[in-house]
Image (cartoon, rainbow, N blue to C red; front, side):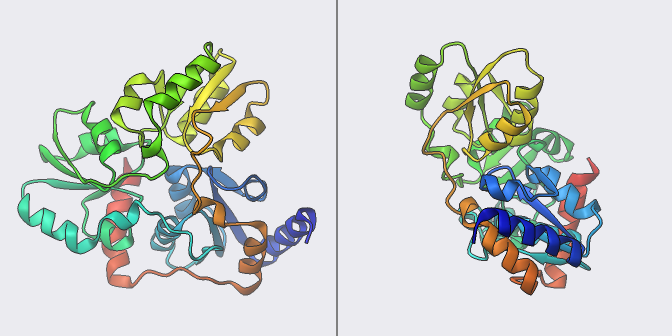
Length: 301
């Protein structure tokens, strides 16, 4: 079916169902174009908790829809591509975290939102890439178990006196960006500002002109006096940059920075989810209650 016809169907169903469509910045361009809101994990978490709508269609990956279901237990939360998972979230289990806590009983647990509900339930507070430093500095303990992203944990460690104990997880997209990519991009675009995501490796952080979440990158590009930018994150963000800052020139740091799971959502399965109200994401009450505390403590900051 032509994309225009699918888009019209989606917009009609959205109105009929009283639905809101939340779309991550890494999603396909045509999916971004039917969103009520495009954003990063923090923006979408806030929206899930505050926006009015009986149905939430979450165009992202599994942990994002789980977070929406935890924050909005009375709403129907749909994940159009049910097999869209986050490999980093699968790099730690609740059992492994419980064991780490027994080994470090004096440490707070800060978990990246890129985790399962079960891991959030074992954590003191959640964070996103845009507020990780603020969250780490907010806990009273001097030692912090930071899960699951070692790169984000090490980035946060640059801005705190606390001892950070990073888990050895990573984003398979950002972790593959190398200094060779930076050198090639700098050579091709010598006047461009290099913006990178804090999920990148420390050596890439050191080479960047600015480090920010996806929404932070968009804000920087749109408000900067500069005209050219090298974008060091998943390439899906380039569509939103083109829409919001059409006068700027943005180049990917790596053409291979593609999250296959983020690309599993298309207009057809968004339409189908709105028609059937499934696949629906739910979280068992006892886990949801504990995880909600960690998420709400983050949002309260």
